[in-house]
Image 1 (cartoon, rainbow, N blue to C red):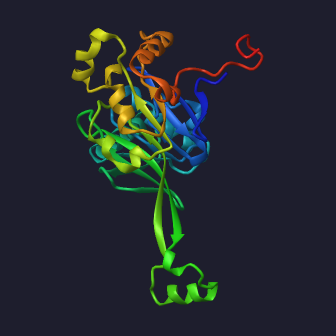
Image 2: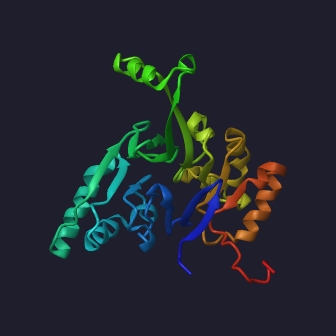
Image 3: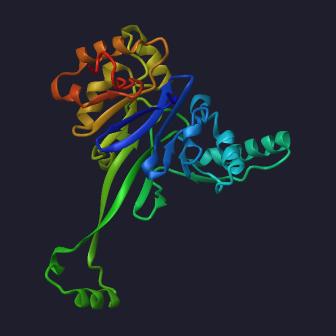
Length: 287
């Protein structure tokens, strides 16, 4: 069994692994994008674009290995979309590794700021947004772009529409379809007010602390405590929610029990824990 846990949530395939302080990596393979790299597990090496939320080791340690392995297998240089302040440090990191290995691994390092879209492929962009984790930390939303014919041009023939376009008339509206939001590490913050976050099909959000006496630790580290989760659900009323970034000390059964005391009904039914593996076929639970 691979180390990454695979799930299909809201029609979107997700592969990931997340333990706070150890490793966090979440991939959306069908969209050819990965959020954070953890230790760069082999499953993400073929993915062309990595969005790095911030520079903490458990989220970013595998960057050099990811870029090196792409070079090793003859793939195009990996593209790493990062907070702008991390561009120079990452170039220096790759220079150090070049001196250690004796050769340079090419890298396409793209520095971004909040709300600066980056095209992943035609009609698909990733939009970074500032989160509440200090420094230059970012979350990311994957957005599909569609083009819808303006209502006033309904009934026009194909040639008529072509003629209008040749005259410079805008005949279509640009429609954004938010697919997947990844918050990275963050406390609750104003990023929850963004429409593209609220309207995402799936939101992968951290919730690091579940013990009641750890609320001060959550505030100090700018992480989400389970007591904050009703605010998250109220701000994102319709999305499927995937919780990540539990610590190793937090038993998953305990976390689910605590969450069930804070969240009720339909809200509880739309929450999934990233690190909960689906039962194997033929297992006692499945039978």
